[in-house]
Image (cartoon, rainbow, N blue to C red; front, side, top):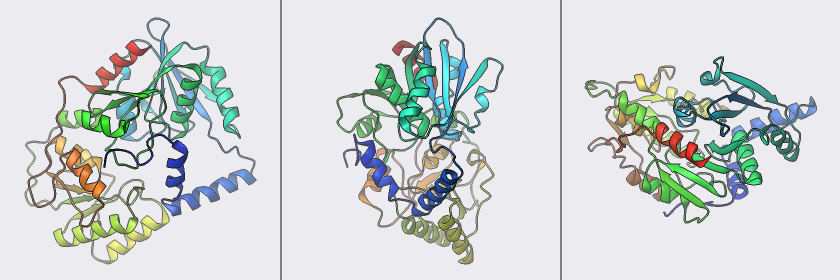
Length: 362
């Protein structure tokens, strides 16, 4: 498969996304209706966190989540940035990196319509001298708002790859630069578009994992850990749950739920797995502290484990062709053979490279 299913249209990708994970969609719809009845605005409030720097140029970073992948991809560049930085995030997202005395915080109130949100954000951003924008993409609130503002003001923008790429990834924003893990990922995500530039910088998440290498850890006798993926939109739950059940029973593996497996259907599936004899791993233990063989389907955690020197594999019978293509693109090895090798990494830290690129863009 050459690239994305929806390489240019965010609206078509959103239509596809709305058909997935129906339990969460119903939950969010009910929550939204209750908020509407209470008079609560539907679009989230935003917070602009600001730090001064050298010169007049500034960088805007949009952060939609406090997840390790999000923070590793976007905020680890902060120590290498000399220019002023503004970080845009939804209200309530806790980012410890922005808690120092050098940071000021300005709230942008919620809005009932997107045009009003754009106007309120533009009032705050227009006079700040921002020369470049950095996000994980346009599919969530802060990232979308940042890219809409960048397009309206002809400001340079960049998107950092933060996970393994499937054909169902959201399309890149118009006129942006992709900061990719590899040349193969760059071409896959670009999907033939001529308005997207690409730069290969590597993965900060995997680079950090490599620095925490566990080469001396002996996993002999340890039960494999299966990384739960019932939350992924790209695969039916019957596929992800079925593969997990078959593998855990056959190999006496522990099931490790993904933090996003918190909806009603996932919890019901967990109950069924336990009733059928599957043991669970305590997911409060960070993945980087798991010193046991790791197995997944399309999880970035397989690559993280490989980077740390932990044996890792993928598994799944009768998976779609795009899953096998993904396994080959990342050299993920099938269970039963040699473990997945660590992805090659450059000599320089990806975050340092990203900081250099962004300071040059402004």
